[in-house]
Amino acid sequence: MGTAEGVSSMVMYDDESVEVHYRHGAHLQLSPCGSEFVLVKATDPHGHPLQPTERVRQRTRFTISAYKKALMATALAFRNKYASRPYLPGEFISADNRKVCKSVKQNIDSSVKWPEWSSYKPEFGPGGDIVVRSEEGRAMLTLSPSGEEFGVEFTCNLSQPQHQTVCSLNKTDGSLKSRHQANSQNDQRHLGKESANTNSFSSHLPSTTQQQPEQMYQATTVAQHHSCFAVDPTWAYPLSLARHHWTSRLSNSEDTKFEEPSKSRQADDEMNISDKNDTDRDSQLPQALPLTCPSPHWHRWKIKDSLVEEEMSDLSTELVKILWCQGVTYRILSGEIPVVEVSPGDGSVIRSNGVLNSYFTHHKPRLHSEEGRETMYHLSSLPPGTPG
Image 1: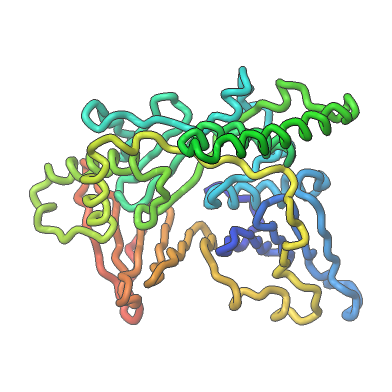
Image 2: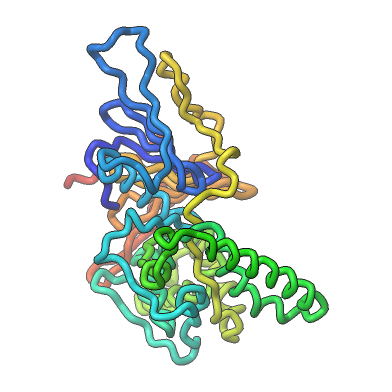
């Protein structure tokens, strides 16, 4: 993961707020919606001991240039890589990474259809990964060679003002509400009033504040990273396709039949059986959050003004979802039995074994040129590091 120099660690909490720690002593926290941040600057070593720490609170979109590239770009990229819904302000999307939508339909349509199970032909990457693309070309899933994690890339509309987002969501939900004919008439009357109010509000806006169509309907490509141990329903079907062909490749090896399948592989086998009938080929891609948060008064900042360093952050009282430190990503998968997953960055995955949380299984990439294998570790007796 490309990160700016000077970042010592980044944390995403369970509410999807992000906290970034810098080597020079500064702390930055991004709100769960991504629209606001608080920056506590590093203490001046030459300043007076009683001088309070400088604290800055700004909206992400309107941050000054001194913070935009050096601080906010890294924090926002980290958030969007793991959050359920990205925050995509146009101020942070370069012209090279923008795609202009030709119509309103392209702007509000987030549904994709994946290939049929019987007709899909696997696409293998140079490193041994397996790629599945949607029929419209708006989404792509890449299964890593280890078979334990995957990445996705999908086209997503840029974040829009709150009233435009509500209008777009109402239009998208119209197709879903047709299934409930008993309530459709009341819903349509309600949506009609909302649409009329929105149009009335927009018509009274100054011409300088109204966005042109080429500015409103723009999109970009979002890249995310996920674990095969906890899969969102959006990616369940394409992942089942990729895992099926990944397992088929392993069956060609003589020694794989003697290996014990991992928990994620067992869960995937069950998912394959249910998905072979092609009933779940349609899925809805994640949509970007609105530009402004509807409830900014709910933001709770974990960074506090204090002269005591230990009170700067409440790390021990918050549920951590993702931790990045020195190039290694740590993921905590919540559930009845929490699971810790470590991605060292070499394509392998180290995962704790449920109840026996002191034991970890190292799932290594399985390529044609080398034999992949799983190694068991124990916290009290870790093996020595491999030279090189």
